[in-house]
Image (tube, rainbow, N blue to C red):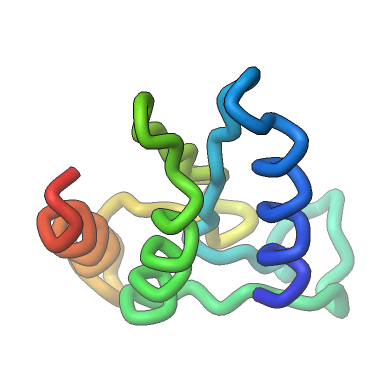
Length: 106
């Protein structure tokens, strides 16, 4: 998260009201099933609670006028990066997204 914070601050300062900075959040990522990845590469845990935390972190960087947030890798099954219902969390990822958006009135 520290690297994400540094990147977000640099990009939002670069845009400085002349361009729109659109923050992005991932549901999680793993390369253990991806034929193009290395299973030893670091992973970002995929679960509803950590997804909510990442969402809340990124919402701090929303543009006041556009309020756009990009969810990266929202349906990449090979990289375990999806918001769709699954056998592990059911609708948990979608419910996490809904809760955060309602909490911040988005």
